[in-house]
Length: 386
Ligand SMILES: Cc1cc2nc3c(=O)[nH]c(=O)nc-3n(C[C@H](O)[C@H](O)[C@H](O)COP(=O)(O)OP(=O)(O)OC[C@H]3O[C@@H](n4cnc5c(N)ncnc54)[C@H](O)[C@@H]3O)c2cc1C
Image 1 (tube, protein in one colour):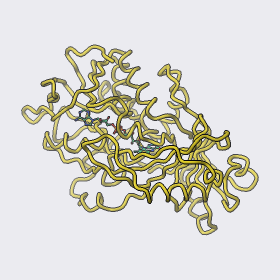
Image 2 (cartoon, rainbow, N blue to C red):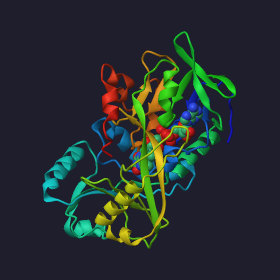
Image 3 (cartoon, helix red, strand yellow):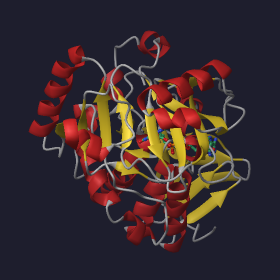
Image 4 (cartoon, protein in one colour):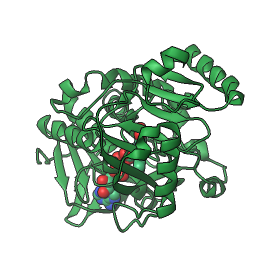
């Protein structure tokens, strides 16, 4: 893919779903944009992702972004002129124990108050929405506007649309560092030489920390490996994505019939490679958990397993927006296992920030300086809750 590259105004580092969405929204707004990806589009977290487009269960700091993204998901395939396997068939977070009901009902109430289309479902309604659930499942919180899409296809569709809108999309170009002059980031240093830009947006996922450090910026993020398993295909039997309180589970049936199962099972990672290494215990644990909640999955053979390398921030929330002490640099990293759903909104608000100077959704609660004075090493060392 290629497009214009001369006189670049904005360089976006990283061709995952986040960088590709940002490049698309910038190019669409008429900004001269260069997207640099060291391997291929969607090679890292964005190609390994579970692809859930869930608004429910979001931290209040990112709920407005998530709801904006949900509105965009509804028409994204038309907008990008691509089949990204989007299915808007709901998300269901179920409970197995009566003692979890109070927490579920409270969480539904909080999210309804924030404007989310979410409700408690049980009995015949619950079984109608997801007949494949195990008989012991009691109830669930249901968001009919959630769903899933193919994450690799989505990132590639954003990148292709960015190129069509005039962005230069370059694969196979490694950024070795940020070019800094007089305390300002003025572009990047790559294996092809130096590229200048008025603004550089760092969207290099788990690789962002080392790149930010070249401009003296400390990003409180750490890599984490998240494991997925994929079963063989069966006849269609499940519409919504299913999660379960107290379990590591994210379960969906893909359009081709395979069950895609994750939920925060850890795998091993090595930043020299775009994918991590699976752990047998996690594959087994993930399959057992899935079979306990959706019994039919226990009767289907395993087809594949993989580990995506994701950037986890010190509070499991994305780091978004300008770096106050270093001009010319914007961060979009640290998506902590839930960046895919947000991607249309992230591109939109960052393009607004660049073009209009102000995003339509305030990003202050997600700014890097929220970590000032905090011991982020300790929180980054804590286990990931999923
Ligand atoms: C297994 C798994 C399941 C997930 N499930 C969900 C889900 O159901 N729903 C959801 O919303 N989110 C989910 N996520 C999270 C979501 O997929 C990520 O938050 C999102 O893909 C992050 O995108 P990114 O563009 O920031 O990072 P990445 O996709 O990792 O992209 C970063 C890119 O930067 C490139 N790069 C790195 N260094 C350089 C360099 N020096 N020069 C040039 N390029 C560079 C990399 O090659 C890479 O392509 C999941 C993640 C994983 C791993």
